[in-house]
Length: 98
Image (tube, one colour):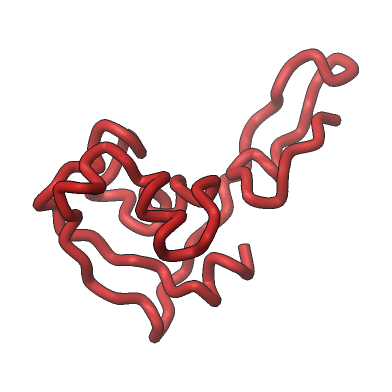
């Protein structure tokens, strides 16, 4: 089984054939929270969810939480992260609990 960092969205993925292949991925859910907030992506974060993740959560590896919290808006976690797009930001306590 491959070992992924705690901050990776692949952390629960299983491996096949002695670890040579990645099995089906079970993506974590990013549930709604009272600490979530509406946000419009600023130009400085255009196609850079890693920079926003670092700014909010102190870790750029959490770039993927925006796509999982906004699945109807962000399909591609990089290319769909466009300035002017309104999204919901998960609260820090939610992200730390993933």
